[in-house]
Length: 440
Image (cartoon, rainbow, N blue to C red):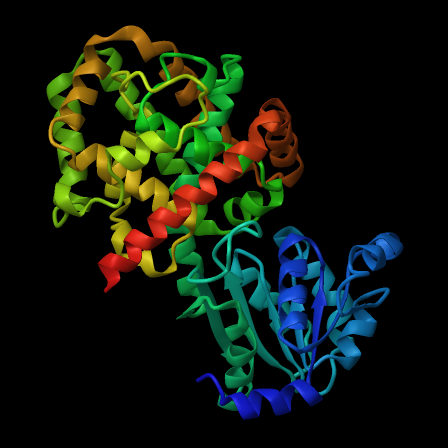
């Protein structure tokens, strides 16, 4: 329950908010809370103390050298650190937590985070965690914000909910286990698809917006989302993929679906391919009709990275999209069940997948092209290899290998990131508006 304005103003006079880890999301929270009138203190790595002080020189945020100083004075302590470091960082600073403090985290995988809190925090602290389901470049307004009341009383939970109300996000209440399953369902496969797209384009030495065959609205969306993912920091995706066991299952299935569908395509087994994809369509989109789609031709054509005038869509197998629907079907996932706590990227990709499967005649065109037209056969092969390579990498559990592969591809596409994010932000606004229409 969000407290009254008078009560919130009273709390601002007595409560201190501490943030350990002032990267992109930690900085976003620190600045927004400070701007709303809360006393905010924070720290980042001790070796970059001077740079962090300079980073916040124009903000009302007190920067301390390390998490001990932050923990001992803060009433609500937020660990905003990479998922792979959460156990180690909590083990160092948890004993310094202020008596009676509330402690939470922002990692994308909550069960390891909660386990670290239970292991290292003093028993006189509460555990109330958060997760904003969007990146730092997206407006927080209207975006899902998960609140996890793991250990604590109603008064402290109301305080935390009132604090984050300044973000104007949509609050979603889950347990850590529910959070991790839903984020795997809505993010893991989406990330795998677009990481694989970027890998395949780089392997073919292609900037798709400069290649005429990659034309049309669906291709615009693919490029925008893939560039948006690669413009972010690698650990945003590695944390979810590697630390969440449910994500492992999703990513493995996506690679398998990609391989299975491609095998049917190159063998020309049109009927088997059609039956499998219609099964997926009936599982996911049975309650969707063409007039209710999140995306339409006008929206998809509008947000292009190409400088060339629209020349109509190039028929394509769209293996990457077919495989995500197939993997959802194989796993029994219905993505609409989780739309309330989905990321902007997921909503766009759900819209694209929905458009492909529910636009009259389009799925049939993809199946025909997949089995009879070799135009995209080489690119589809590169995509299959890419999807399997990401699956193998995630299964290995190596953050270092993940980072190396991600940053290598990131460097290849870097010149286009600024424009892609601008175009992607406009597309996200349209998607969010349409989602709100359906919810109402």
